[in-house]
Length: 160
Image (cartoon, rainbow, N blue to C red; front, side, top):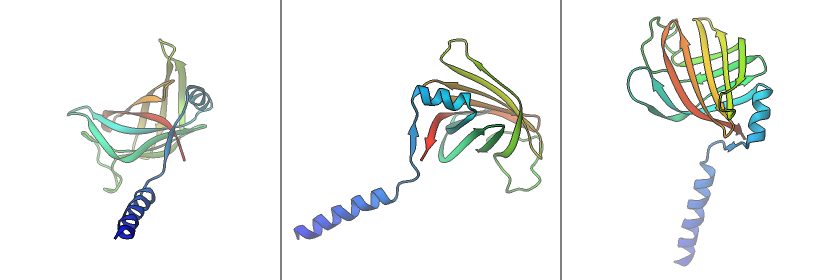
């Protein structure tokens, strides 16, 4: 009988560890500074704030990545769209495009950065404003003429 109990506990622990998703590791202040300065970072978002309505906790993995002179977004969208997408399966904010008008400045309190850039997609021009703090916390505002603006909050992390 004891062996059945031990076996059940062992299988339960094994099941818990095998079901884990990809691990995200928080970065320290120096790592975040280096990544922001090199334009090589990913913000994983966990809350969306539509222009209308209340905050939405995101249960899936969404992110905005900056890599050199390109931006890669996989974000949800909640709000009013003034122009419908060409393909109905193209919901959300998704792009993998070169960035232009990139401006990065140290914020007023000197505890992070303000980053502005634009992306030209098939549907529209997208304006992005980000704040990244030295502790990794970040916020993202996305604006375009085709949709109401939306705000996200998340954290810069290393994807393992």
